Length: 56
Image (tube, rainbow, N blue to C red; front, side, top):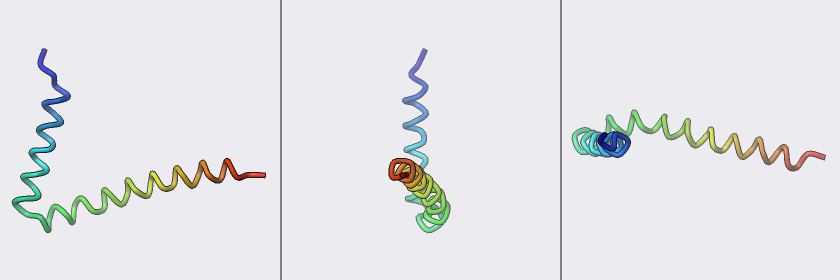
């Protein structure tokens, strides 16, 4: 059985590179909100645990 996870990961990297090289403005417009969502999610998890740890 071939290593499907590695093949899928490399395919995603190649697709991302292709998208950036062919139309960088369009790709940035689509990736920006996804990254904002991810960063806000991580930040909110830290805020939540900080609030739990600093409770009296």
